[in-house]
Image (cartoon, rainbow, N blue to C red):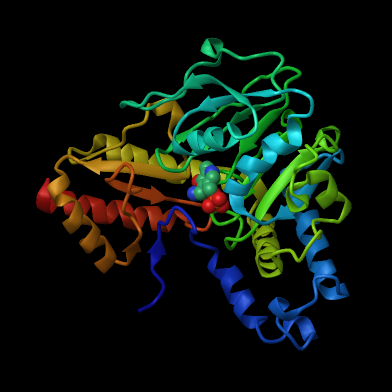
Length: 360
Ligand code: PMP
C-alpha cells in the first residue's frame, strides 16, 4: 500500500519531504557516519542541530529575545504539572478557562498543586463554543491564566487572544502551534506537544518569558524546572534527540513554505472549504458555533450513526485514514494539520459527497 492521506489527530501526518530527508540521512547524517539517533547529545553535530532548530523556531514565531525556548520530554501532559510547580511562586491560586477535554485535564492536574479558579466553562451541548471574555470570573491575584487555544477533541478554537493585564497568559498550543502567526509577546508561556504540527511524539516545546523563571517550588523535579532546563540548554538530562532533529526539519519546511503566514492562508482555505461542504450537506453536521470552529480539527457526525462503520470502511478503502472521532465523543474527526494540503481536503470532500449520494 502506498502512503495514505492521514487525518489523525496526533501523532499526525508529517510533511513527506521531511520524511524523505530523514530517510536519506538515516544511516549517515551529513557525513557523520551515523544516524542522529546514535549521536551524543553533547557532541558538536547534535548541539548544532539543536541550536539550528531553536533559531528556526524563533524566526518562524518571531519569538522575542526575552523568552527562552525549551525542548523537553513528558508531553503536554507533563506540562500540566510543570506549569503550576514553576509559576505559582508565592501565590496559591491560578485561573483556568475550561473549553473542553484538554482544558479539563490541565485543570485536574493543577488541582494537585493549587487552588484552581475555573473562570468560565464552554458549553457541553451543541453548539459548542467559547464563553465571551466579558463573562469570565477572573482573579487579578491569580499566578497565571491558563487556556487551551484549540481543543483537539471537540474542535473548538479561539480565534482571539484573551486579555489578562498583569496576569501571565499561559497557552496549551499543542494542536494549533505553527498553524498561523502568533504574537508571542502577549503570552507568559506557550507550550505544545510535538506530535501534531511539529514532529514526532516524545518532545514538548515550552516558550517562557524570562521573568517567570526562578519561581519554581523547591519540590519541582529538576527535569521539569524551567530555570534549570534553561541554564542547561534543555539538556539537564538526555533530551529526545531524534524528535528534536525531526522538529528542526519541520521548522525548515514551514520556513520554505511561506512561514506562519503561508500556513495560515492555506489552513484557513482548507478549513473554510470543509466546513462549507459540511454545512450545505444534509448528512453531515459539525457541532461547533461558527466563530469558534477549529482550523485544525474538524469533528462531524452523520445524521444516522448506523452509517458510521460503512463511512469509515469506505474511507479507508479510498486511502483516507484515521477519520474516526475521539472515543469520548464518537462520530468522525478530520484533523487537517499543516502537513495535509488542500488536495487532501478536496479528496475528503469528494469521498463525503459520494458517500452522501449513496446513503443520504
Ligand atoms: N493538550 C492538547 C490540546 C492535546 O491535543 C493533547 C494531545 N492530544 C495533549 C494536551 C496531551 O499531549 P501529550 O499526549 O503530549 O501529553
